[in-house]
Length: 398
Image (cartoon, rainbow, N blue to C red):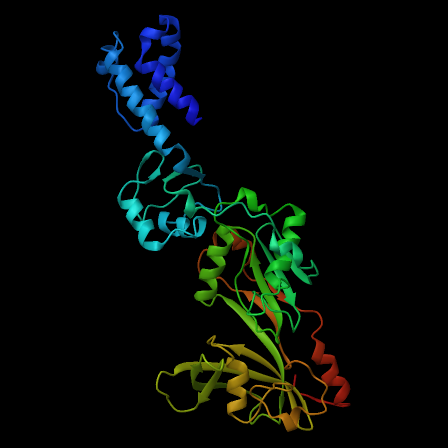
């Protein structure tokens, strides 16, 4: 293309070397070159180009401008998953090697154009838009030769699936995202592998979107994880979770008998990032965040209780730390429990499971309105049957 542009520019600038017929053929290309370079030619000016000299010079300059920027330009055609994003948010994901300060500078200097025109940082993208970047090649990642998620197995326990989302039962021991070990076997990689094999995720056809998880669960906790298949679903689900329009209920086994058959506990939580632990107190703490944990006793026998827990606030390790702070740590919890209590149980993981999910939309949910009022439950929680087996004749409270 660059060589063609150079040759065409030379031809247009020197028509005396060629017959008029060749010049007329090249004239159409020259107009395209001028428009592409952003030079405005009015109808009156074009009508005055009979002799060709002024037009030839303008076209030659345009062609050289194209030659200079041809290999520095990259275009993105905005698809459905990209639509609705701000220009800067899209570019942060589509061109991750481009520093933030340069991104804003290039938008300001018109080196980022939307449909051939200047755009602002806050401009919203629409499906079908053409976003052109006139920046150095060094900021564009080379095509990925290996799709890392293909190294992860496709083993998934799918509770529910439709065109917009997946509900997956994550088993204890599996991380949701890559951690310091850098091992590829994560829940998100398993989901990407699954969708790739189904043909529902094609990385080469996406500019910025990757199917994503909407909630997280600790490695040693099991339960329902929501994965969005498209950007529209991801935006809705993230907002609904933020607005607490999704109810997640947990099952857990704790040491001891609870003082009440049901209650709402209030406390104050402080996180220690260095040790990845939290401290909970009944009294306000400096930098402490208020937490509310509602529980209901389902069964109890001996020195153990089976609880259903509803998180009214969602903080790191809230259930584990809050119950431990009142003297009822989770069975098998090595971090917040007591080793002497867990010794001999044979549990590798804490007895905690996010087992029930209900969609309770108070506001419009767009393409996900059909989920309103629906409840999904994990059919089998690993420790529930074991609890009943160990406690031969548990006293049922429900």
